[in-house]
Image (cartoon, rainbow, N blue to C red; front, side, top):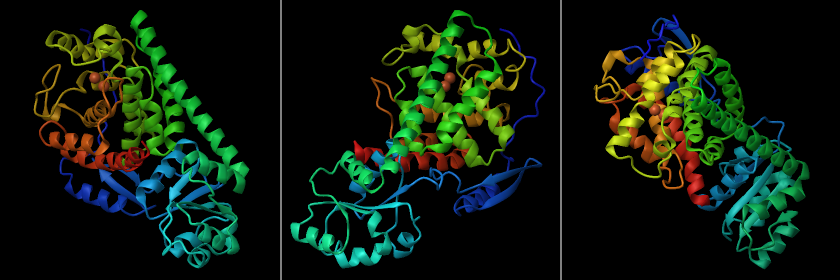
Length: 426
Ligand SMILES: [Fe+2]
Ligand SMILES: [Fe+2]
């Protein structure tokens, strides 16, 4: 096995050894929208931006705001609209929230009709002059209430019992055809970027199978640009869904690890250079799998002990491949070799532990495990995100860095929050 020369880079450090004060500051910072915090970590300053990842598109687009008390029905609509490229959210039912919506936005009352709450007088007062851009998408609306709403000046009332997202989109098209056009363009763009990412990963692995030369760093950089486009501009559930539907399991895994790493980098307040280093390490972490026979790599079920031994070799193959180019030699190769090592020394290939595992490897390991748990295969449904995070938590302190697992909760919670909506939509 060859030895990497090393990149001469300073180790990437996110965490001082005594982290508790930082975790507290991080929690305080992330609990307040839009605040920035400067934290001094290992004598370096990292800007922590919070409140930037709410998944909203630019304000120039029409936002669809859903108002309703019945979480399941409203969330079903919300998830459907997000998937179809709309900028949509659930709006708290307070007059001040409704008063703050943009003039071009569309309000939707979604859910089960309740005569005591959905009165024409109450809703008229709540939406005020926004009535012309308000849709009453209520099931079981009585004919008498329908005429009362009509008389109160609500022009867009659901007249069918068809409560699907498709029928809601039909009503939105009546209010604002341009909003529907924009949404379909956004959905098409996301699908195209997502396909490009999937094809590039499949292409990389098939090239490596034919000729195991070190991939060029530029390959990771262009993937980072593509994935940032997808991830930075889409709600988390949308990009996870797109990646989970990749046909190729390895493309799905590498993209998911890279996506979680980008989300984790944002949660950690990593700067541009640090994010780039994390992404490179994530994107190339499993390149050695190109050397694993496909009948083992893509086996639809548990590996037997001999197959497992072969599979474990992927970390050494990765190291070997990445050491062949000076740009991927060093940190990237080391992370690829060590990302299955555990703090308690029970991992592989070398059983190193504790301080021998650096921060960047600890970060990639967490993203790698979370991706493996939440992947979707024909033979394996993804674990729910809160369950996947519980598994990570159960490994914190013994196998995984407890402070990093704690900080990853933000990423997992964001994924779980969105995912609950999908569960309702299913
Ligand atoms: Fe791996
Ligand atoms: Fe992996």
